[in-house]
Image: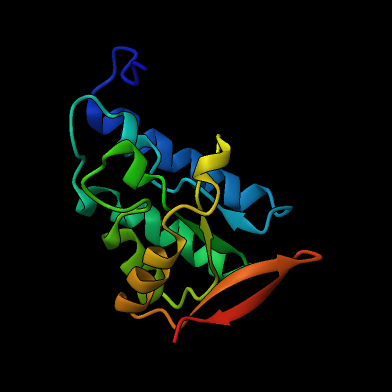
Length: 148
C-alpha cells in the first residue's frame, strides 16, 4: 500500500490524524475508536515521531473522553511483527494520562485461529501501563472488567 501519493511523510501522517479529529468532532454514533495508529503499520518510510502527532492525539483523546467513548487496544501487532503495540505504548500512556479509562481489547480476527489471540498478554500490558480495567459493551454501554 502506497500511502504517500506524492506527499511527504509529515503530510500524510498529519492528514491521517486531522481526519480522525474531524471524525470524532462530527460523528458521535460510535463506542470505541479503533486503529488509532493504523497508519504506522503501512508507513514505508518508517516510524513517524510520536511528538509530532501528540498534539493531534491530545485533541482527539480529549474529545473521545469528553464524549464518554473509548479506544481499542488491538493484539494484531503480534501477528504483523510490529515493534510496538497497536496503538503504541506512547499513545496508550497519553490516553491514560488525559483521563482515558475505556479500553477494549480486540484481536483483529480475520481468521478463526486469530479469535482472542494474545488477549491475556494485552490485559497484562494494559495493567503494566497503569490501566485498572478493560471494557466490553452491552447495549452500547461499557462494562468494566478489572485487570487485577
